[in-house]
Length: 209
Image 1 (tube, one colour):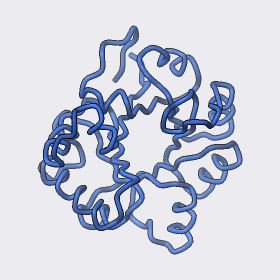
Image 2 (cartoon, rainbow, N blue to C red):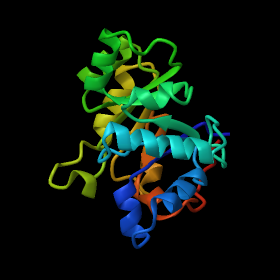
Image 3 (cartoon, rainbow, N blue to C red):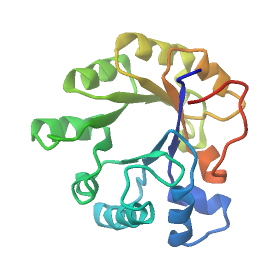
Image 4 (spheres, helix red, strand yellow):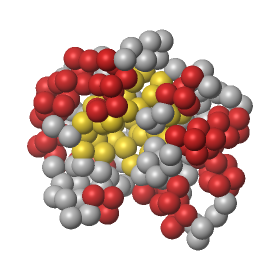
């Protein structure tokens, strides 16, 4: 049985573009039903106050549980207020935020810390600071990084070889190229657009746990 994992990354604006607008309540219900291993609630357009309100509503909809109704591990992004006010034991951070929080000793008691990296140097620094896992990208061309060339599979392999913590590929990944990620040393793959289109991805030619 393969241990390669799927990670869904949320995006309110992207969801609305795929679903002809839709209310915030409908979006929360949608996220509560996503089928993946991880659900990174990454709403970069929201300020802290708006994000906290949104994350608390999702947390309530999932029964104040660390996992949503389909068993996806819910991971807040950036704001520690979402961690402290829910009792969530994990968070995902940009590397710069991770440095700041670590220096201020604000991460005590958080069991799982994911960090976004874009180079081997950043990956090594994040691991040294205590990251539990990394997301590395962008691997393939993506509209989210329009105009920026993708870093490619060789970059992903370099990141995987430079650290001992799990590395999840991100950027331009979809069912048609997911197999390429599976053939690397990556622990899994993050997808945003594919999950914002629909909650359950099609069957792949290999098994996920």
